[in-house]
Image 1 (cartoon, one colour):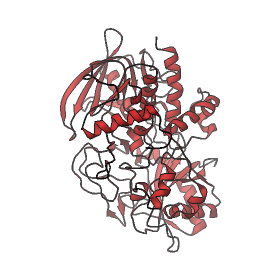
Image 2 (tube, rainbow, N blue to C red; image 1 turned 120 degrees about the vertical axis):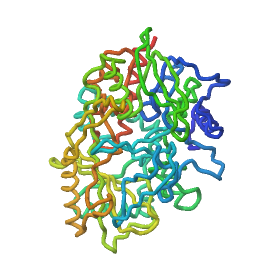
Image 3 (cartoon, helix red, strand yellow; image 1 turned 90 degrees about the vertical axis):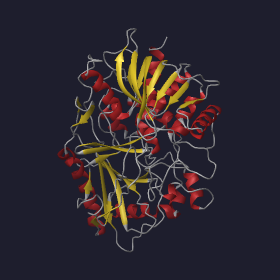
Image 4 (cartoon, rainbow, N blue to C red; image 1 turned 60 degrees about the vertical axis):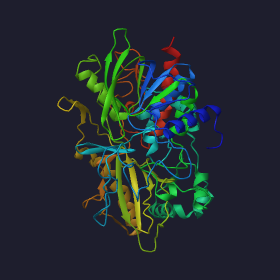
Length: 535
């Protein structure tokens, strides 16, 4: 339990642990809770960043709220004999959502396939394929907070004002970004410890190379507890970030949403989470509310039943892919036929490009590497090729002489979703050539870095001979853009009491890891919605 844990968070965490311990799919801190009702005044779809903000603020306002989560609950009692998550070097069925093989961002090493066969299960990480683009999403209570690298970065103020000019940037940076950072548990690495930590030797090597090329680096805040990590390195606590745990979840140290916003939401006694509930359809009720068709899953992903739920207030927080698909399906099937044409448009992968560099034999990056990045190369102010590059780990447990980066670029290309009636699903029309501006920006910066250090790119990491991987993203954004598909506070045009509260609101790019922006924007929007839309 992290320091400063509130009474409300304590009760919420207790509810999460109890549900996990007994295999329950209904999570609540309310005493003597009856079986879930088929009507709730408010329903929140999803349990990721925007959804968690919505549920917490609704619960604090005294509004009974039901959250519907497609994945399972991962929190477990810390008995010392089991962990909910597996690590990257020894993946098992918990790693991937309904897959028979892992699908890691780094697919090969020296051209040998490093993915592994696993049993099909409702695991924590999903890779959703859309032709030339695949999207990584988290499955479970906490959504993407379970599987990301914890980098809690706010965008440059000037760029935020550029992508969302109708939002008061002064208010966001004065009020809502600080609020989001506090509630998420954002902390900063001790620079002195960073200089001596064996786990960050890989980052110091990349920093030296960047500086030799005249590039600036910056520490990045995190929702991983750096004090816990220091104790990991000292052998005082069980290892997580230093044990190859990141993309398949962290067993310790990480302040994921189940430890913060969701625990506080449950602690109000007004919020219930139903897991393994996949919302398939939304329609309008006769009384002006909304009817939901929900598919009930077991832990093998099989359908074991359906539920019909009704609500007066509906909040979509299923992520860029999930929220967009629900709205697009509702419009194209005629269930919500008056939804705006802007639904499905304005999507982008946040300019993501992954690459690796081969280091000289004297530039060892270390066998022990923290899975939580703490440093980035900041060239966002470059007038031609703006880039913010995470210095990423390669925690293989042996020396690899490899530096890995996830570059975030300013790519103006956008895609849109269409509805495929034959599969009853949304399909993304992103083309491979739309990623070329991102590759050009990443290449311009890292060519400079390689020239200065006489190093080369690795071409053995992505399953073929490509040096730049831009066929996936961890940062899907857009599909129901603020001010286009919705008003300036996430209210969907044409449908009262229907809201979008996640990354679908952001127009394809934030310039940094987006979860702090999603959280802050949700806080802003919920403050207005609660003040104006509820009796």
